[in-house]
Structure formats: structure tokens, C-alpha cells
Length: 290
Image (cartoon, rainbow, N blue to C red; front, top):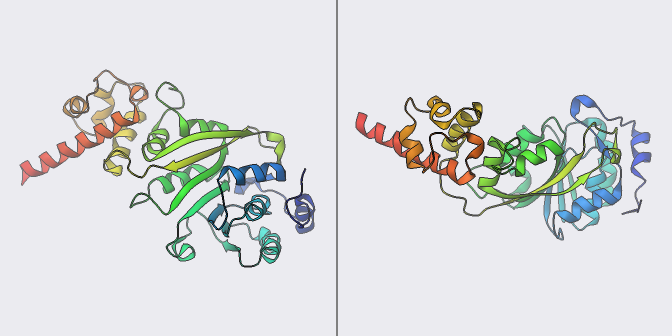
């Protein structure tokens, strides 16, 4: 394992600070600095860039980001046991690491970013990875403040993010939202043995690059039609979309879809057309009542 800086090996840091990974926090520490370096490089050239990291733990990926030239890393960590170890990294890279003691799901990053764009690079805690991603994908206005996401998930979650209709078992609401607003791809897998403690599953690093101009539609209506369609994914649209409208036939026809189609057969563009058709239907209904 190559050394990326003059700081002590991560295993030594963990032992010295008593940082046993906690299952309740979704922690699995990545000790292999070759892998953390690979993740940092996968995020693209980092020279002078601001990077947001979630759940740095003892700081393996944090060190790789800084060693690869990140101008500033904002690391959000809710486990206060890790703060002394992160303080040592901050001292080694003066002025370049800001550690935020808090919950990533509840932290407002605006005061730390001060209007600057940033990349998000993280080995996400498994128990909050999907809610964090949905939150980043749902931000308004779009494009958001982040310029790329390079994130590690459980392999099964990664497959759900990048799935297309032909991958019916994995294709769902998350894939529609992610691929409507971003270009997505799985970069590489990370074996169980790279972590301490080893998780029961393989992990994957996923990259999402925001589309500057996604197909126009109201995100809330897109979420509404996907919730209805995938909530009863084995049923035909003419039945599942009754959760949206008592008679969904007009919006299905307006979207150019077959009433007999199922959610897993509808591409992202089809759901966008459904959302736009629903918007037109709701506007017509509102105008008629007034």
C-alpha cells in the first residue's frame, strides 16, 4: 500500500483514537490508500477545487483528496470520536480542511460554500446514502451548486441509480430522477475486504454529472407520476396512474404511451412527458373551475 503523505497509517490512527466502526452510523472504514487515491482521482482534476465530503471517519479519503490537490475540503462528520483524527489532518494541510461537526442530512452548506461551486466526493454511510442523493438531485434551482457527484454505494443501490428500462428489476423512481437530471455511470467496484469491518456486500463508486438543461418539466409532478407508476409497478399505467387522476387515459395518450405499458417499460423521457401532460391537465381543470 503506497503512502500518500507523511501522516501515520490509518490503522495506527484508528487504534490510537479508539475508532471502532459503529454499525448504527453505517460506518465501514476504508483503509486502503490506493483505493482512496483512486476515488479522489476519479472525481477529476482537483487542483484548487472545493470538495464536500460526507462521513470522513478517520480521514482516509480526506487525505487522498488533499494529497490530490483539492484547494479546500469541507468534511461533515457526526461521529465526534473522529474529530481529533481529522484535526490532525487539518494541521498537516493548514487552511485546506474545514471539519463540520454535524449531521449531513440536516447541515446547510451555504454558509461554508459562500456561493462557490463544489464537487461532492464521499464514501457515504450506507444508512443515509440514498436520502442524501435524492436531496442533491431535488435541489432547486437547477443546475445546483455541486458540479459533480463521485459517491460510493452498495452495489445494488449503484445499479438502481444507473438502471435503464431494459434492466427492469433495478429501474425505478431513483433511476428516473437521477438520469433525468444527470448523466450517470458506475466507475468501478470496491471489494468487501477493502473495508474494516468488511460489509456483507460489494460496493461501487458511481459518478453523476449534472445536465445543464434536462428535459423541461415540474420535478414535483415527475415525482408524483413515478411514485404512482412504480408504487404498482406490475400494473398497467391505465390502472397505476389512477392514484394521480381518476381517468389517466388522456395524459397517457398525450405522453404518447400505451395504456397497457408498465412503469418498468417507460423511459425517462416518457415519464417527463407524463409529468408535462399532467401539468396541462391540472391547468385545464383549474381554468375550467375559475
